[in-house]
Length: 178
Image (cartoon, rainbow, N blue to C red; front, side):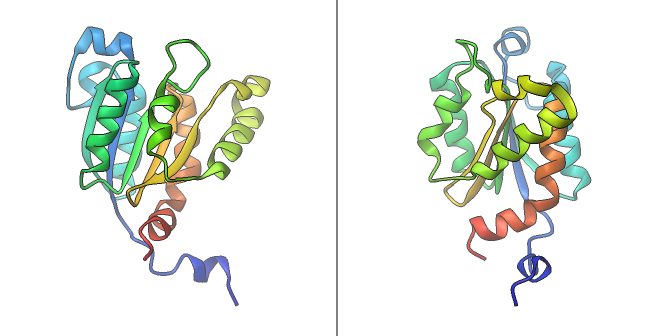
């Protein structure tokens, strides 16, 4: 009998995470940096802290402007790194400068639509009401790595990670075919 407990057996207890913050204003002010606190990046710092509390390791952090080619280059670096998971924040809205989804979509081999659906549902219920429809937050798989593209707001990042982190070992198990 296939139970949720059986399905979660032998999942990795820790993993390696790459964090990408997409923000033109922060990039113009701080340039290339290697730690979120050096750019007053509340969302990046939140991701870093929540991942580490889980006992996992940050192997890469990068601040990138809202530029399709630069975002693609950063994701490609992470896809060929030791990271098991890539989490980005920023650039998932509807403004003309929000291009994260367009930049990342070509790399996604398998979509994880349940993440976006659940995230928007929880955002609607717990945070922003009908405005939840404006986010294009997505998740997927590329090169046996889990990818999560989150909005830039710290509240949205916290909500998304509260959904994802308890399942991360389970996600990685499936993504890597373990």
